[in-house]
Length: 235
Image: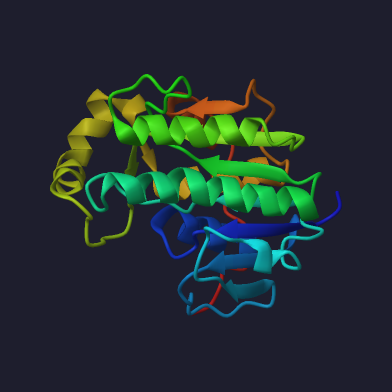
């Protein structure tokens, strides 16, 4: 199999950070271009870091988005952290603009997208997060990429301690040991989610009906992907 060139957006976030580390050690990934607004603080021979301050306009990224084989898009925000207008801008507009640029330079690329449980492509949900994630999904599926993989995780367990963004996340982390036993299909480890997203983009995930993967599907995919490639990034 030919080694792939992968572009990753959102590597300073929780899921994106794990996706980056996994991709850098992946034997089928030749190079990773990380595009983000903040520096990563990582050093790895496979890594090319591109700072881009405004995802509302990705025209300056034309050269970076050309001749890519795969993309993993993890850029996003949490409900309650920003106002509704900003939530839509980040969730929908940034996704659509990046996909437009990638499609122009790499029309045959595969695209893994971090959506969320409850995403509603019909636009009927009363929850803004669900409507906007659904709108972004709908736009991506209409772009014409040969492979689009949409992941809808429920509660993403951080694995490593972090400062939780909201009170509800602090509560979920506290009850996680019980929650995962009672509701196993409503939780996913962040490292498992990141690994499956990268594997799907570089076509090493098991074949399953798609393009939408709910939390139950993601959990099923992780069972055959428990080993992690060697060669993690150094800080």
